[in-house]
Amino acid sequence: MVLSGKQAVTAFAVSKADLIVIDAISMNTPGDRIARQLKHDLPETPVIHLRQGSIDGPADIVLSPPFTTRKLNNAVDRLISRTKSPDGKPDQTLSHGPFILNVSRRLLTTNGQDTPLTPKLAQLVEMFFRNPGEVIDRGRLMEQVWQTNYMGDTRTLDVHIRWFRSAIETNPAKPVYLKTIRGIGYKFEIPPK
Image 1 (cartoon, rainbow, N blue to C red):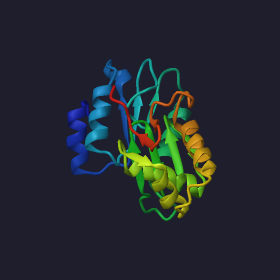
Image 2: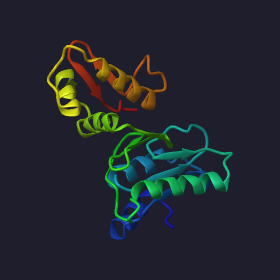
Image 3: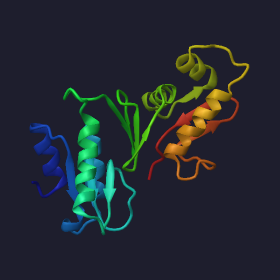
Image 4: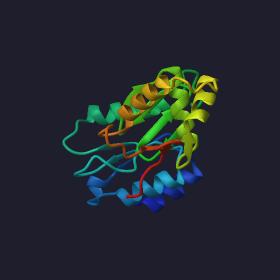
């Protein structure tokens, strides 16, 4: 147990942790700065943030009272199992803002909610996660995910984009994270707060 974000980064740099729980409620602070610093310095380590008020934040899971010990334990179990494969080896995960993609399990986690992905949707999401902030044109998406350069009918791409948006956007009709770049393609990015 450490008492500040700075101590946490120092402690976990020496001995790798499987998970970090920030108890901002006990520290009487929102804890957002601590969570942001930990996610920046230890991007592969899952973080649970216990805080008053909003459930938004940079951590993998944010819990706000009232919550039960069972809910906290379930969050811990979910994050630990997400970072380890059945054989005990680490899974490959990609993380951006409130989103975590477990590549090997084809599982997208948004604010603590898991969404299983089809193989093609997982490839599409992975492509965006590996190229954040980059405009990816429709032709490149069709070529890399569906192994075709045929652009006559791209309804399957449109459907997969809609599925991705429904998993990450609060209002998919007004996307914040996956923007359409008219006439070109799409851009996935986490807007600054």
